[in-house]
Length: 445
Image (cartoon, rainbow, N blue to C red; front, side, top):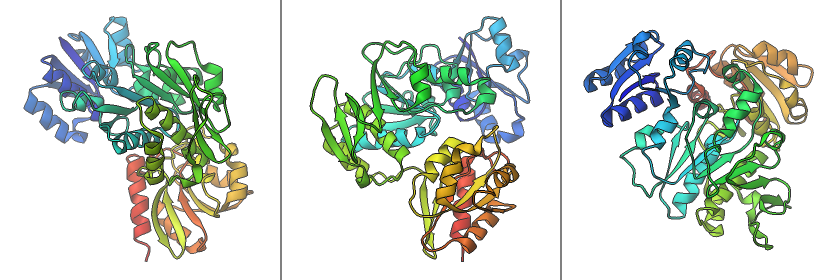
């Protein structure tokens, strides 16, 4: 079979190498110039895989029996439009890899909380003696796992709306939608399309599969289509059954039993914030479906300290705690971060906006933020929006913002880097941005 792979990033290269290992004729096409992909070009040459860089040409389509597209290539891209005209099937790397993986697969999506919940579920499963691995949007493409992991290993995959948008047959055994708020609308074209992409995570599930939904999310409640999977809900309010908060306790209750099972007190969780309580509820439902005991769930939640760049404790300097939340690339993620602490906050925010509406943060900033430091392309927009609510300061760089925070922070403060914006104005990605913040904090004298 002739397979064209679009994109030479992580997932594109993984798909191309998998297709090559499966004895297909592979052609890789990348829109960017080859100077950005020196290592990838060397590997393609080594394997004898044909390629082109600097644009998608006719060569990408002329012999293609199927196209595997990378996340981030929008559906309105001319190369994909041409493929549709020629009736060339298009699938995502996620779906292609899944066809070779018989493993039990848990897929997590949502605007926020995906990485934390994915990591947490794998942590609980491994802590309970089951073998689990994280993959997908979290860093390891699914294609890299084919012919590498044991069939009994449970795959816990973070799935983005980009990845889900192009799926046709992808089917997880357990699917989770944590929440849906406006994000990536430039890519999807509308909120309606973004919601549809999220629900594609469950469209191929059967009556034997499980779909876990957030009962408190109004967008999910208003847009859930009829789906064949068993549906379970989690909530921060008591429910008839599911996983929920009652008082300050995590409670599980099955639909077939009347007894409530108290798992733990939320205050005993290591992760702060209501959003992490929601993530834990979703994770508890997923692992209980795989017969993990209440004791293992409780033990894991008391130990799990989170993931890099998501409410990551960095250092205490002159009594103030520095927290890296660089993964907060949108307003909703910043809302969760700002609501996670009872101490006064010095808030560092800014980056590249995406038609951001900051009004949802007004009350939190009024009550929780003692001082705000703005950076990046959105610095002026953030400053102008919040300057009547709290003290605002402008910084030219992230390093300068950290230095200013040290000058203004008291020993009882939290210095929170939660940008509420994308990273691409000043950094390669949110990981790069987070590492720069942590280095700047470490460099404080």
